[in-house]
Length: 305
Length: 293
Image: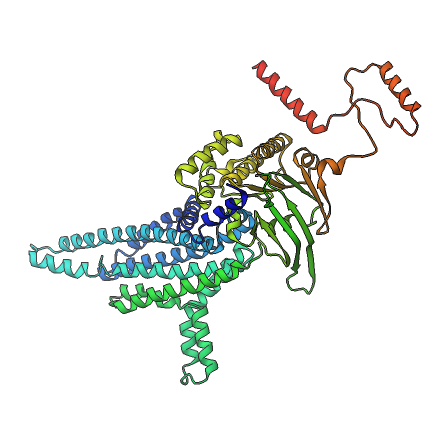
């Protein structure tokens, strides 16, 4: 084959977009984070929910189960968000600092693939950690609800009828391990996914890991307060001016409303989570992931490395 | 391949200007640089720190975009991701993912180059053997020495079977023995017909491996050409004699004196280089150690 034919063959052989390359980067990101021993956090998580369990034994079973669920969801959300922000902040700035990025981008890898690969890797890590946390949480809840039932039966001096047992079971288990809790778990994941996309965007223009963490945390906290702030801002009258509408829209796009994702609070209080709310959350997550990934790419594609 | 008309690298009128953040000032890192590297050649880019070598390499590899001019690899524009399909790059002082082992590192880069599992396995075995890291293939890179990191870096640069290899200061911070190993690897690449662009401060090494050299200063290519042409002192000749007696040397000196215009500048024992002496001593030392054991 002469040189020119070889050049054409090489340029033809190159895939403009390759899922295999993205998967290679995601898997590598996941392996890297796992080998940084991030899963040691499970020890802290276990200590928290077992501690919550032991500390509130003297409460009524309704209170005890609610506290267990509150603490578990709170800890899950906290850990998932920390992973999302800190884990993502560790990726691009560190690759750039160590020049590892040069070795990746000088292979036939488009920059968008690198970004998507990194984001998917961190999402995989968040998904696995949430899965582990929920398994532990559900196991503790399952054991506790059976424990409470046994204690309840034992505390009654007379012979307990089957009907009574069924009634206790119904009353205790309805506050225990219910399938709806899975919706709360999904919401925790969606929230962390949006936080990771925010951190990814910040890291494309940030010069250090610390800067990425700080700016992402600021956006994260503003995102929690944005609905509150907007309500307050527009409380006294209807939105009339185009400027106000634009401002409200801008805040809504730039700062994701993280408060919306906190459906677990309602769940533990016994509220029913509607399918439409969950669909809205999934849609919002997809919207923010797309917008933040696109903006990240626009910044990163032109970045002088 | 070397006879082909398409040059491996073509840089024309390349200028790169950096704007300093928060200031009005601009820094011209590369100023109208043009060069061509033919396929199969080993090209040495030399120049002091901050002269524009790394910037030139970064433009060539698509890591930064030129302010003016253009660069291409085997006819494909550097901005085109496809041009990286035939390139391997080893940056200066590289760090890789220290949680990965040597073979995992090569597998990762192999996947980025689109190699199949079987190809990755075969290529990893071959490259680890070539860079003398077969014994350390299952060790994490966090435990590698500086020289080993440079060698695994060279292996990752070669994993996609590139036709052009770009090495930025490949021997920076490596001891003379490790540095010699890398030099030998560059010679091996040359033997295989792979084009190499090399930047180094170790001029003796550049002299040992390069066919052509370009000297960059202040972002401009101030001198370029075949190494032998550049370093030859045209009005001087060298004769190296083995076992010459003092009488023979005297007769030669007399002959030169009798020749009009000719002059004997120097006569004595040629010096070896400190690097060669060091390597010879290490070699003999390890041989003796082996015999003692």
